[in-house]
Length: 509
Image 1 (tube, rainbow, N blue to C red):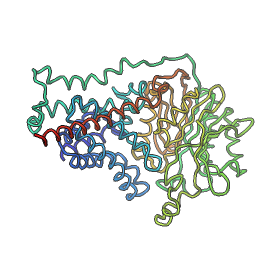
Image 2: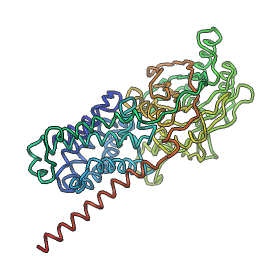
Image 3: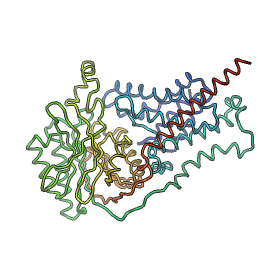
Image 4: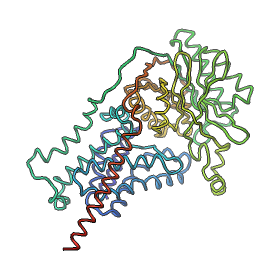
């Protein structure tokens, strides 16, 4: 139990804003050591304990919605880790079990991103490795391969612990432990260290000699928490329009280079510009002031009862044009699952208001000299959504986000780490525009080149490389994830089959 708890703490420390990425494999090592040699029921309990210790602080940003929601989310997500731990218990009897355990971990994270209610892929182990020795694996197999590599390193360290170092385990593993000298005993540790070094062999596309100047606007909002937008009508719209005009003035005065395009955050207008003349005129005036195509974040009405979270290209001459509607919606934030039941039982659910409908097309939007890949906030955590947009040839990736309700929590830095993984995974620069922060520019190598503070109005123009060559990860898509997950699940089947055969033989004897 102590090892499981300590492992969960170390996993949390690997995630932003603390970001001690090296504690991730160390945490895995302790969690695996706690599971080794246990029966499935005991393993499930220990896996749940480790997950809860990890997820309670890692998902503390959910407290903004309510402590009850935070508790329920952690309780549900921890079940996935418990199931994985129970399945892993017989796998430890197989040779090369660190490989099979790492595959099981990938299967668990895949399941978490799928169910329930569209999945919750937040706090995947890969997202603790935004800029680490493991990040390069993203260009080969995406976020799943990064998670696999971290878990493999940790499991190899655990192998050394339970086989050679800890007296409590040596009697259990003596029959299976290979005999040999110091070199053989140190081999698992050496392999654990060697895993991240393999990133040096991952092919990475180079620069293509083309750039684009992108203006980034962060307008800020007056409120906090669930009422971040404040009570003043049109305050979000006014703040972002004013900051866009301030950007235009800075360019005109020569303090900033002239942008080719400008990006505003998700929900940078709190009034539907299609239906409201004031909102339309305000946006149009600020876009005309800056003089280039501007990506506006708007929540727009669809019929009388529904809405869409939209990335809308606004041209200084022709006005609103092409758009992208957010595909991965936030349950209980943008729409209400099991609406009638939830609204009857939970008063806060009424804050959702109009129900959002998901978009059905990728976010490739032509803007000036480039076609950007629009991604909205929450969906940067979804592999398939980002990959689908990049496969259109769009470059750079533009993430519009509204983190106003979660300002100064650990959500904004966690989301920035996801952008770092996506940059390396797809050989794309990533530009993030946030209402309250963190707005940032991430290079295709995953390095944060510029970022804002939170809860301030800010703007800048950054020069961003335009890359169109695809990484192996972009081309092969989800195949590495499926292969690794299937490998782990198959190992469970083999372990159970062998266990039954051994039991039958013992019974006959």
